[in-house]
Image (tube, rainbow, N blue to C red):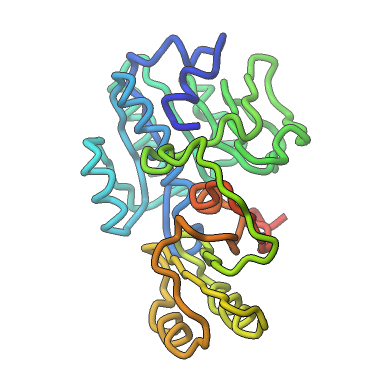
Length: 287
């Protein structure tokens, strides 16, 4: 589902009634947290804009290619130097909300805790939280979106007014990936074309570990394709590993039989009807 489908799909919710209002999105991207928060918000922003709405980003992202992507989409971007818990974060966000009457706020990031949500609600603003784990002690958001497979099994301690949009029917995919909807293919019993992707940053270089593990497989005709994100700091070591790999490198990921990686938004985008070989990584919230 794309961002515009999320807006239309939340029938009966306030989302269908305020598309003419500005959407203020607060999300970050860096080497440690990756790019998924910002990129799934891009999908929502595309849907909002396609439906006729205005989109404003507030971000502490310092990655120029990612920022350029937002500029190229025609979004207004305000760059933040000191993210929450620094007071500058809420001060800038509150100021921009006050300048756009009726605006909704979107929060996407594990550092936006219950206290930050309370600041937004206490100031009288409506907001949506994009979440993954129901890890906070309380949610004050008007709407919580969790697009994960396990979302419906989670318990959200929230306000009576909070609307929960849970499950894969609310997955946020950018325009370029929506073209793959409905595509069908046969999956071979043994995957021989494998895509490896560990998200937009992969600070611990798990990609290298996966490549080395795949190199040890004794599967005839095995081919791999490695996709790394714009915030990945390990380009040199990965190129070296691929150069010395005995495997053939695939040229087109659309023909892959399986995907190896973490379960973030990048995995959903690239999956497109193939098997997923998931990798468990440490809880980003530290719990």
